[in-house]
Image (tube, rainbow, N blue to C red; front, top):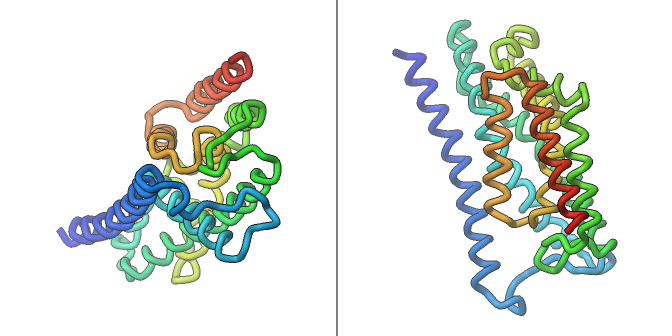
Length: 251
């Protein structure tokens, strides 16, 4: 029963993080739709007008989004890590914290790249002041990129690692605190390799589009958990993205 209690308590902690992240996103979304634009902070439309505080706020927004969208899909891997730690009589809570923090750390680095990309998109006039896409060609280009990436071997390879938590841990296991942190970094890298293009779709549907966030989160969870060959899932999703991009161009 000890392992069950440990798993339950760690799962509860992770879910608190997830709900806190989603709660913040709901709050931000409600602020955007309930307040007049004159009283809201929005990133400057001119890249040269951005100050440090603008970069910091946009980065924080993306960081919370990545935690909200990606932590749920990492729960099977985290719980598998807990089981292995318990079987080996390791310091479960400490090592799990290091593993999860390293995993999130990779997504926080990726949030920095998304922040810079958003900054550049304002310079190209691809985003509106409300962070919605206002250029159908750029939106279609993002969808084509995300769609074609689904057919690439690297996508399938990264997804395969994410779909098999115990296989990943057996092949990549390292002892000690440094080992747990390194494994978290490696899993985070595989996860970014699997899902980075899907995250770009937020620039298509609107950066603060809650429905878009929810659907991409469900897509990521489905890709990692459905008992189908990962290559089949990748191709089906990729075809849907490409078809969406074509529809945008036609419209």
